[in-house]
Structure formats: C-alpha cells, structure tokens
Amino acid sequence: MNATAPVFAGLALLLAGPVPALLSRATWPYRTPRAALVLWQAVALAAVLSAFGSGLAIASLLLVPGRDGRPTTSPSQEIRALGLPLWLAYLVVLALTLVVGGRLIYAVIRVGVHTRRRRARHRMLVDLLDQGADHAHDELLSTTPLHGGRDIRVLGATEPIAYCLPGLRQRVVLSQGTFASLSSAELAAIVSHERSHLRARHDLVLEAFTAAHEAFPRVVRSKSALDSAKLLIELLADDSAVKVTGPTALARALVACSNSVAPQGAMAVGGPTTLIRIQRLAGPLGDLRIATAAYVSAAAILVVPTLAVAIPWLVELDRLLGA
Image 1 (cartoon, one colour):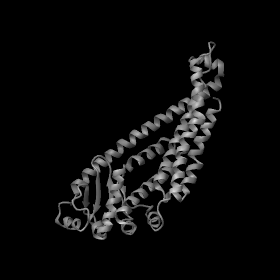
Image 2: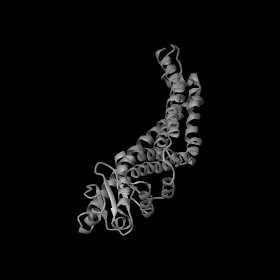
Image 3: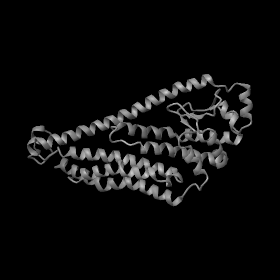
Image 4: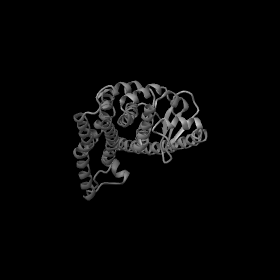
C-alpha cells in the first residue's frame, strides 16, 4: 500500500511529460490518425487517473488503524499515530486532489456551456446571412453533387471560407468565394470533410482535451495533447473526404481554403496544419501493423496500471475497512 502512491505519481509524471513530448514529435500518427487519437485519449485519461490515484493513495494513509484495528476517523487519533507534520502533509495532498478534481469538473462544464452558447449565436447569424435562396447560389450548387443540402449555409464573402458548426442543428458554412474558386469535385471534398466532423462528433473529442488542458495550472500543463488532437481529427476528416473524391481534389481544395478561418467552437477546413495534411495525401495512408500496436499500447496504458497498482491498493483498503 505504501508503494502505491509513488508508483501512481511516477506514472502520472511519465504520462504528463515524456510520453506526450515523444508522441507529439512522431510522424506515424499521420498514417493512422484513428489509432493515434485513441492512444492520445488513453494517455490523457491514464495521466489524470494516475494523478488522482496518487493523491487518494496518500490521503488514504490518514486512515491509520486504531486500537481496535479499524481505521481511525478522528483527527486527534490520526495526529497521535502519524505526527502533526506528516498528518498535515497528507491532508494537504487530499485537499489538492479534491481541488484538481473540482477544477476538472468546472472546466468540463464551462467549456461545454461557453462553446454551445457561441455556436448558437453564430448559427443564428449564418442563418440570417445565408444566401441560399439567391438564384446565383442555386446555379453554383447545381454544378455540384451537393444540391439541396439542408445543412449548407452560404455567406457573401469573396475569399474562400469553409467550416462547420457542430451540435444538434448542424451547419456547413461556405462562402461565395469558395464556390468561385473550387470545382465541383473540390466542393464535394470540402463538404465531405466538414460533414465527417459533424457525423463523428469530433467537437466532443476537442472539448474533452480542452477541458483537461484548462483544468491544470499553466506551469504544469502542455498543449501537446490538445494540438495533436486538433490535427488528428482533421486527418480523420480528410480520410473521409478522400473516399468520396480522391486525394487530388481534396489537396486542391485545401490549397484554395488554406487561409479559411472559423469562429470559436467551429472547425475550419484550413489552418496552420494545411501543409502537413497536403503532403500526407501524396503518400500511402493506413498501416495495419502500426495501428494494431497503437491500439494495444492504448489498452495497456489503461489496463496495466489498474491491475498492477489499483487492485492491490483496493484489496488493502478493503482489509483495513473490514478489520
């Protein structure tokens, strides 16, 4: 039981520092983005659980056996058994663990509420500015396989813009400049990309990573996981578009929309990772061996610590409570 806390702490530090640093510099995730995203989620979840496990394991040492063998719940008895300095140290660790847990819950709620409010306001705005009823817009859509798309909204901007608004009332937002700059196949690639985000609810994945990022103090948190998740969901949407139009049409569409921007809470087709995504389309996609290794690693990261550390700790705690 005494070894549980340091093992959990070491695992949390490993998964919060060296592992994300190495994983963020790797290039193999470009070929297997789905497996890489699962691995990132496993690393993030295991780091959080290990941090909580370490704090709770230390805090559990407050439950020293009393005269009758049962764990004490009286501070005076605990102080007599542990000594005041050690008792205060354990108490501080318990308080910090509860604070981090509270910050995580608060971050999840805050990110979810604020993101949905921004999306609702922007959705109302694009619905008001939509030029979908214009005759010119009908002619543009008639040249593409997207005619009649109820989720598409068109803005009057001359620069190519393409992004999506997730949620219950989903929107794919394009501009007149997008229709003027892209061919029919390229338009289909762009819309397939955005609709893939909406179908897979990639926004929920980003919300989870954003909340975990914001839950920890700035001095200890890193953007590696969040930035990698943003790139990987774009690669997943690219793979979906490639199945519809092929890599060439998508690559050309990405070049045209590379400067596309989106409001907070939306997902734009362009961005700072456009070059990486275009270069990726020129090479082979998918690698079964790497994907299998990533899935096995993700399972091991979550399962092995539980079997090796958590179960013995729970057994010891059950012995204490049942004494």
